[in-house]
Amino acid sequence: MSLRLDVQVRRGPLQLAIELEVGARETVAIVGPNGAGKSSLLLAVAGLLPLERGRIALADEVLDGGAGGPFVPPEARRAGMMFQDLLLFPHLAAIDNVAYGLRARGVGRAVARATADEWLRRVGLAEHGAALPGSLSGGQAQRVALARALAASPRLLLLDEPLAAVDASTRLRLRRDLRAHLDAFAGPRLLVTHDAVDAFALADRIAVVEAGRVVQAGSIAEICSRPRSRYVADLVGLNFLRGICRGGRLQVDGGGTLIVSQAPEGNVLATVHPRAIALYRSRPDGTPRNVWPAAIEALEVAGDRVRVRLRGEPWLVAEVTPLAVAELQLGIGGTVWVALKATEVEVFAA
Amino acid sequence: MSRRVLTSRSWLVGVPAAAAVLLFLMPVLGIALRTPWARLPEQLASPVVHEAMWLSLLASFGALGCALLSGLPLAVWLANGHSPLRTVARVVVMLPIVLPPVVGGIALLLAFGRAGVVGTWLDRAFGVSLPFSTAGATLAATYMGMPFFVLAVEAGLRAFDRRHLAAAATLGAGPTRRFLTVTLPMILPSVQAGALLCWARALGEFCATQTFAGNLAGSTRTMPLACGVAMETDPELAIVLSLILSAVSVVVLVSLRQRWLVAR
Image (cartoon, rainbow over all chains, first blue to last red):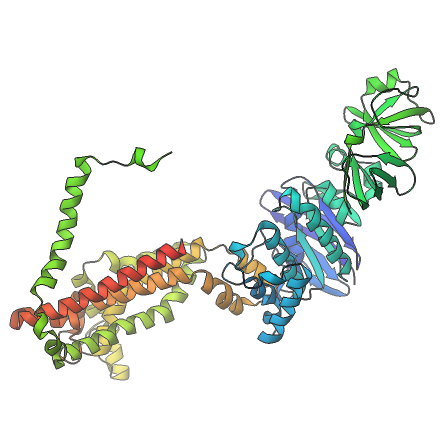
């Protein structure tokens, strides 16, 4: 049951024209700068912003056929949405917030509450059912909002900056839990975020939206290796690694071991900033703990910098100045030594 | 930043403020001191008091009922957007708040009186005549009280974050359910405040009622009217009626204050 979008609508000064397909059990992250039209896209899919032209279809059902065409109102779409400001009902206890969607679909009060209770337990808030939203912490409110969207058994899931209102310490855990809930959800999932790491950690595919248009879409690897605009390069410019961490050593999936500082044990995600990677003609002799040889796979100019794709263990992308390229005589197929400080590898639990 | 620093304690504030407090305190004291406390139970049991209280309850709660039934939808429509038609409607609805009540009574008479624009037709078509009837007294009370309700509810609706309705819609709630389960509970403090103001204004209505509905014992003579009549014939009764109305007013004020303290 895939979701096919051809969204054409004007909202204020912005003309949105976005084509996108999201498969069943697929999470697509919409990333882009503020005011690019990311949230408007979600509103259109939810039925809160009717299309002028174009079409939104879920499997064979047309949800919006543009002006004059068929239009399924939001209450009949069963599109679960998590709003950026959460918009929990302040006058209802957490459990009644979660039960709201079930009650709206005619489920009896007792059954709805029992189901809501179960959802609260699943998001780790079994004890907070009676609490009013105003007395919950940011992370707890986030979980209630997620449970509320999921409990209504939606056919697709729309998440607008689901981790925006959470502080850094709860963010990691919440992200991991959110990933688990997304994986367990059977329909298409659309996720809006401005945070590249959230997109990497949660999505299967990324669509970069700028000024109302998709400027680039593809797998994380595709986007990372060939950013097509300065914004994308900055956004996804981070090297993104998965692996297993034991005793300060990160065994990277696909080969290579990195020494890292202060890392959790077990399955982890790690990011390395391309500018934190140093390149040498010969084996360097200094403080960096990680030194390995690599072949130069590609050189790409991105703005005022050159991105150097390094085939080694692990594979990484480094960013250097054009001057450094000239001085080191870097060329495709050549060999360089790569140096990376342990402190420059940011590791977090997967 | 201490509060003390900016708090003015000079006599320029204290003396005029004390004078103002006295201005408002003395009348209340006057009623309390002149009330014939010993004969109060007997006075309260008199049929004149009962009749006036009963009519006042009918007219004031009738006005509140009308406000809930037609004032709530009106406030919803007014808060739904901006248009010249809404502006005109708002001015007309708010007029009784600033209009001298006697003018309100005359206006009601010209519209709904036996020879009035609508009244003639009402009389001919249905044989309904509002003046000198309890329905007329209720209409006058509604005319003077409902604007306060509409004003408060519209303000509440305009301050209400409508995006909660979007959230409710994505959860499967249609327009009616959204209004009943989200809008109404979230603006409840405004509805309660508006209802209290409307009811209190309707309870105290005097001049418009007398002008439009007349001062007829048993059908339009509400407490304020009975009070006015008693001033001429039985001043002690007037004081007792004043005491009841004052007590009710204090209760209304206190509950309003609590509502505002809790809500904001």
